[in-house]
Length: 170
Ligand code: MG
Image 1 (cartoon, rainbow, N blue to C red):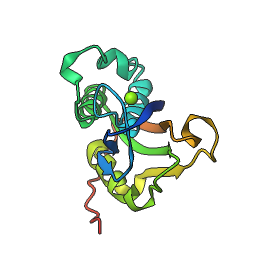
Image 2: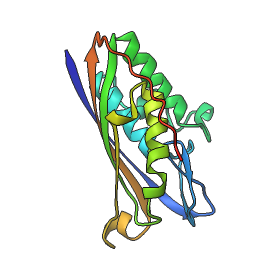
Image 3: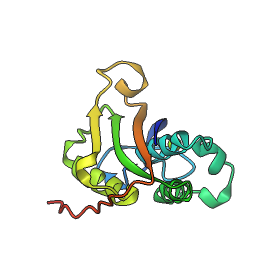
């Protein structure tokens, strides 16, 4: 049995903040504002997994009012979503995602982000897609006021084949 999930997240950008995306620190003048480390991609993927399992959303599991998640590494959220995935007898098949950010260009960081996602989701890097877009100068993304991420994910129950990523990043 398959389940599909969709996740979306947006964070405001401000000077003087770190920009963490898919667990990778991006060299940028502007960083993301949030209660945790504000990793929009990890949040979108976590939300997609919870959606596939019909277990609510990231806010219902990790409230931004909870001091435990202040400046939290968003890998923790992904790890909890994976624990729930396994508890329900599922495994991840693949993930596709889009990060929308005006600048900087994300291409140099994409493979490191894919590797982090592959490791967290316990799948091969060849089943992890991360695409980058700009906002073409319009809207909150296009005017560098926000970073947005969207993800779709496929889960399979009683999946037999286990992959483990070993791709090296140069
Ligand atoms: Mg978020």
